Image 1 (cartoon, rainbow, N blue to C red):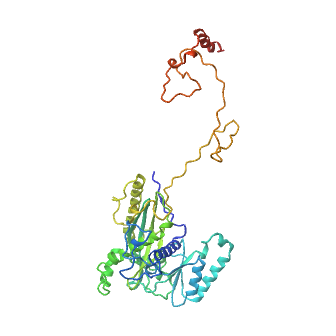
Image 2 (tube, rainbow, N blue to C red):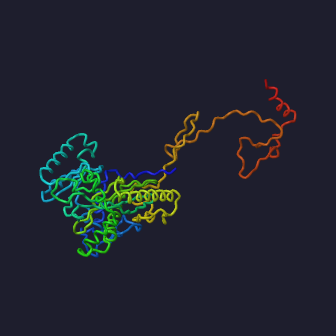
Image 3 (cartoon, one colour):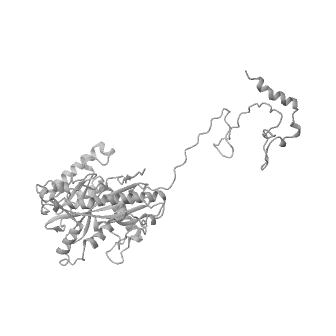
Length: 460
């Protein structure tokens, strides 16, 4: 029976984990590559991921090190006091921020921060939580378990509507790591984009928010586009006007999403549990601004798999089936110690990282090849007195010799046992009967007969 478990990435909620992991990875990269405090400039001399000490040859490398601010909007954790105070200090009303709860979905609990009054209310709420004694026992609790993220106010629009791209990061196996990229779909709002609108359905593209619109049942097929549809639209509308590469969606955009995913995996790798049978399918949401810059908004450990429109019915079943096929195939090969590649079940997913090339045991994660020590054997209790400690090994005890039991005299006559009872036998010496008996131990025939008859006479 195959035992497969969803990968427990959440030592912390995913929003918190990826934010901290990216910050930590960037600090490691800067310290490792710029020991004198130099800056990573956008030029051909910039270091690559090959130079990082925690990378390996088994994954898709970007041309240069990704800096967090290049693909991830400025984000602060409200559960950390120094980050929370930094956000409250820098906030000004010229920027819009979005506040998200961790460990949630469907846009629940999300709101925008536009003015000082809204920020002051949030600040008072977090301070009241900090003063609560329960807060110190449960750090992630209520409104404290949130992140605030700078809102991208200039998104690329499709027919005047905001959209984002849902792609998939599949961790099919952790022993070794086998990481894949999968295409998803584009999600659009029903209403036209207005950055000053207070209606969240114009800011959030997920289906849960769009269903609140009275026009949803009539226009729901237009809220989700296939990647082919998006590519055709970009080609027809922006290809020549903006000087983009042909099929920009399947060339530039796809490559950028893969680079960002590979970078995030390496950054979060130390927080992953590495055990046989663990896997996870992560939904990654990307936004493209009007300068065609790609931003990672968030990563969801429990992506929606519903099929309430035609495009989702075409995409989701294929993603789920190939996910399970890859997970099962890599599980069997890992269990049997076989090479991972080639993978017969790989169809549309693209391999980002092959952990077979990693140093073993894997760097990062909670992988460990150390076997559990065998359980201690119970020693039989001796009826004899305890022996004193051995002089050469303090604390050690000498073995207790078995008690002496008086033995009956051996009956005379032919015997297949050893002639030297109680005496050690010389190495290599065989004992095979009376021929090895010492002549002085030969009994008289009469005595042997009496001895043989004694057990019969003793029976009742």
